Every structure is written in structure tokens, then in C-alpha cells.
Length: 115
Image 1 (cartoon, rainbow, N blue to C red):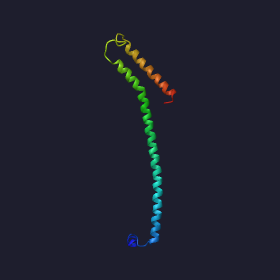
Image 2 (cartoon, rainbow, N blue to C red):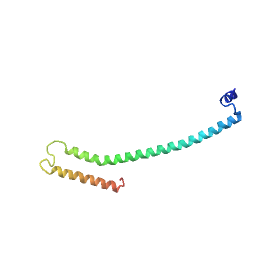
Image 3 (cartoon, rainbow, N blue to C red):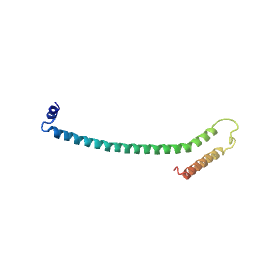
Image 4 (tube, rainbow, N blue to C red):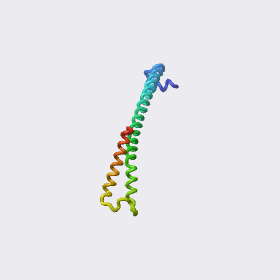
């Protein structure tokens, strides 16, 4: 019964040659599968490295802007007794303070080799 289908597909091949052809094709496909798995793993590793780098940069940026956002939020509260309300230079003093805080953060990040 099996030779009927083999002869129907290619009548010139004997069963032994057909078996050899199937064996060779199986080895080729399995070899290609192993190679493709290696390529897939390399691509997954490259994508993971890129994602980790992007998340690292995002974390550093968040670490810089989180304290600045906190300080500006605290100074933006409209309640009595805020320091510098009566001074015309309070904005510039606070802006300079934020610049100094940012500079100190950048220096700390460079010292920790985060940049």
C-alpha cells in the first residue's frame, strides 16, 4: 500500500531511494531548525539588551526629574507663609536652587558611572 503512494508521487524512485531522500531532507530540516533557533535566541537577546538600555535611560531621566517635580510642586502650593512670597527675586533664587540640585544629581550620576 505504501509503495502505491510513493509511485504515485514519483514513479521513478524505488522505496530505498525514497527512504534515503526522506532521511536526507529530515536531516536538512532538523539542521535548519537548530540554526533558526540560534538566530531566534540571538535576536531575543539583542531585543532584551535594547529594552534594558531604554529602561535604564528612562530610569535615569526619572531620577533627575522626580525631585525637581516634588520641589516645584511644594513651592506651587498657594498657602500663607511660603518663603519668598514677598521677594521679587524669589523666582530666580528658586530657579537657581533647582539648577544647583540638577547639577549635583548629574555629578552624582557621573561619579556612580550611570552616564
